[in-house]
Image (tube, rainbow, N blue to C red):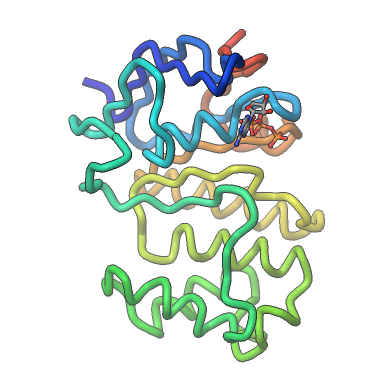
Amino acid sequence: MSYLELTNVTKKINDETVLNDINLKIDQGKIIGFVGTNGSGKTMLFRAILGLIKISSGQVILKGQEVGLNTERQVNVGAIIETPGFIKSYTALKNLQYLASIKNTVGKDEIIAAMKVFDLEKVKDKKVKKFSLGMRQKLAIVQAFMEKQELLVLDEPTNGLDKESVQIFENLMNQLRARGVTVLLASHDDRVIKAVADEYYQIDGGKIVSD
Ligand SMILES: Nc1ncnc2c1ncn2[C@@H]1O[C@H](COP(=O)(O)OP(=O)(O)OP(=O)(O)O)[C@@H](O)[C@H]1O
């Protein structure tokens, strides 16, 4: 059985079919890209994989467990889905410590080590409200991998990142792959995806149109 398997996944909202009979099999330890224009269904697909929406029909199975709205996930998943919801009056470090306190698997030292990937340890005591868009995005990437999550679901992770930071992101993806982490990566910019993904799929109108 594949690590992640989607079978006939369809999501209808009112009269619109936003995911249309998606079938996917993804092996552990791969970086899989999803490319598509605005509104093609990438975020909705990720919501279905994360169990954030009730799909209209079909099935999502992650590591042998069906993903649903009311099931507690066994797999530790890191995600960036839409605008990261940090507490703006908290510092960067306090935000990450707060998120880490939910599972309580990593402490301050590990969090700071993860921040160092993007040089964020220098601004760890700065409040997130004073962060630029790119800095927030880097913080979102850090929260997605800082607990050594085994699956990362990253929607437009390089949004707002400068060239140098995109390069750091690409290096990070290669390091995570070497550690056996599985990454799903969506972007309307196929450059990053082509640079890091083992395979990628094109999504159009809620359908996978090519791979
Ligand atoms: N809350 C919602 N209610 C109704 N329709 C929605 C909702 N959210 C998304 N949609 C529709 O679902 C479709 C897929 O949207 P989705 O957000 O998955 O696209 P996307 O590929 O992630 O686009 P982008 O590149 O802009 O992030 C679009 O047609 C959109 O209008």
